[in-house]
Image (cartoon, rainbow over all chains, first blue to last red; front, side, top):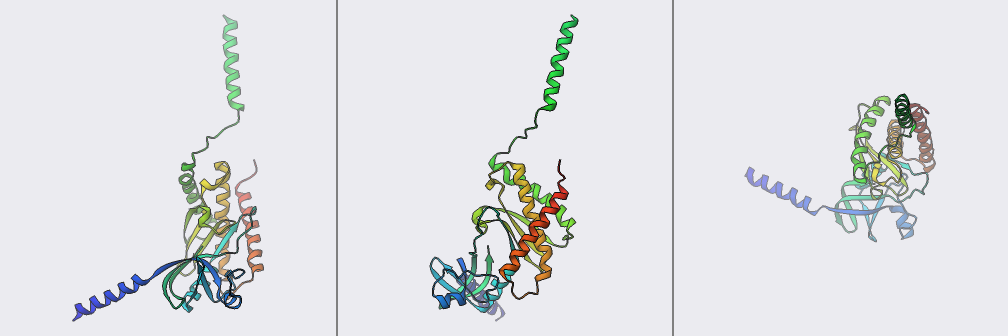
Length: 112
Length: 158
């Protein structure tokens, strides 16, 4: 019985892991995107609380856990700007998670 | 006979003087040699600056990144985890600097010191829920000035 339970647990764990995908793209302010219905001018910033990610033109929202992780990732980072160049406001990110109805259940997020 | 000896001595002296006053030209490393050389140098300098800034409790690593791995218009960045006291500093790869190696190393060290100062200051803002762009911009300017001052003290004008 214990063996069967272990096998079932492992199968469940592997099936969840197998579904997780990597989503790479531009991090957006989800509230801005909802209001404007376009990605231009909706780059995520340190003031953003709800996030979305633009993956090659398809926009996915992050779940609440993903929003917390994205906020922390943006807060705990800093750049050194090149004084000879204009610094981009775009925030690129890699999100690992599962997608359902346009929302990503985030397992991890890496912000550039 | 005496004049020959004198002539030889004069030539030797001339060669010696020429060697002494000639500018020292250090051989530039090949492009593929720049990244490993810079890696060694930066690891040494990181240990020194961590010690000077009293950040020894942090586990900090340095990664050289090509421009595609950095935010556009930047020369480096730092990501930290305050709970685990870990941080990763990314600096522009030595092979992407279009300048002599020595100048590139100086600028890469500036990035390291710059990012360590950001880390030093992070404790002051960790409870902030959000920050304005002006606040970040002000911090960036202050961090640049501090890094510049520290490195000037470290590199006295010759």
